[in-house]
Length: 158
Image (cartoon, rainbow, N blue to C red; front, side, top):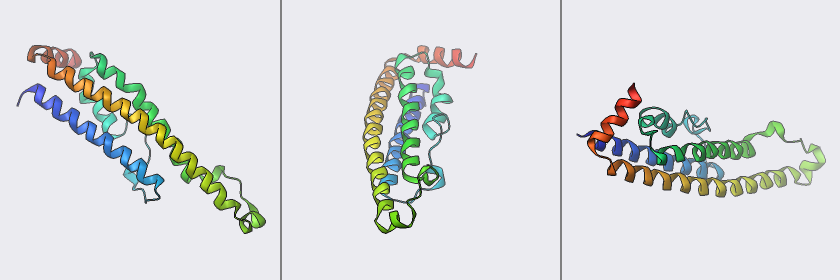
């Protein structure tokens, strides 16, 4: 199997991992239980980030590769914000007996959930930017000759 084929397969797997991760964020807002593996992490620790900063870093000479980093980090920041909106009760003032009696607790929760949904719309927009850059990166890789790919990997290893 050629180096180019391996890179394209890794790139497609990374893209699928990204899409799956966005689905987890959507499920979180829908109230589904979150597995420990799907709790927000920094952009360097997710499956896509491990590829990007690991094997994928050999492609760092390509502009389409470099265009991915900031939106990817922004995406993680948004996901962390959504997670905190939904689960960080430490920052929520206790409504007290009368507040609970009058339903203020559920009103606050609903407001946080609505804000999380709004932030998820932003997250989806950033995700689309990332996917567009990934498509461009794949096109750029496919356009490279085998010699150019070898040079990229030789330079990355040196």
